[in-house]
Image (cartoon, one colour):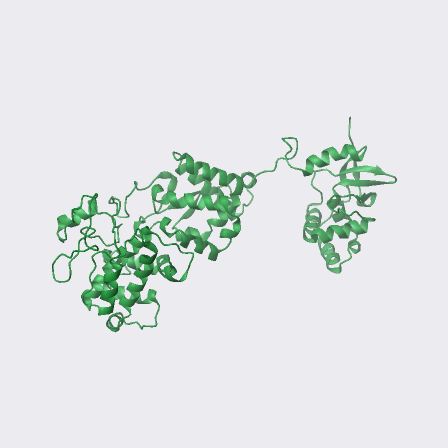
Length: 503
């Protein structure tokens, strides 16, 4: 059956008293208009402003009416006609604030005087199309909405601006799909997240998170349609555990779990063991999808084995190697270590061969500050350290993380240490650490000249690592684990050793 179309003026139509947006029904146009304003005045004003500026209504979505005596009853398009009525006669709004808003909107341009409209024969005939219009895809018969990615792609192709968060979302997802193309599990997770929560990716990977991870998004080409790529300072294998956690969080949790900078910061603190180490970062960034260093490669290009201290951390001759301050090799649980479970104690020499063997064969420390001696420190600190060396990292990682912080602060807070560093007892731990590092190594702030054995302590104290260290004591959301316990034990051992030698 051929349909009939007319261009109708707002004065020729009446709003539907059975409009589903107004479930209690209405008795007049004025009541319907003010009920729509009560429902969402801002949206109705925005619609009116758009029609006034453009001079037309959306031609892709025609209103639908039926004949009602001398007028036409609006079945689809009530908001459009209500906005047009208010533009023509703002006094229809009961609220003076709304009246002023529609007067200002009308002054923006020339609102359309009439609207091209479909004339249906009956409410029943119109209802079929109205239901399809408002109830989703309906197995392909209704309107299939664009996803956020499709909307952004359309805008880019037409040289329209795209929300920066959406740009980040698309760039991150596209880069990971390309970079991890041989990792179907991660690709599947990223694709699912992209399809269902695209804009949330950009909310999580906000500038503060990008900065913390030393990520940057670089643009290729010109104009708003240019593509972005992700540039990093750590290789794919190093970053994969973090990406898996991040995209799982975005997919499974509401945006409240990462909606602002403070919450995102806490979330990162809770998975400190998954974050890449600053000391492992390359000097120059590279595009993630184009590779980078091989698995286990350190920042200086050398290759590490499991348990090896990365570049910038202290390296030791073996997990049980230490001198007792008198030149002999100490024994006991904090000094003994087995290789492969064969019960052979590692050598305690400091020769070049021993250091080389330690890099290639060292197993992770079993005990906190394993084998460390501080003979020049006060008796209380020596006693505390002796007890700490009995703490097994794998079984008591939470205690170890707390005790590393306490031991470091006590050692840096003695009168002798304060005199060397030039700070006061009441100063923050961060200030005490950095001041002591500057005393021990005047070049500590110069990345090219600094003592590499003290580097990790400096990087941690200068960055987010300090917050983890404090978080072990003050923040219940920071979750210690063996990885972190070993990291901080290794990072602060050289500082304590050098301080002891200076006392």
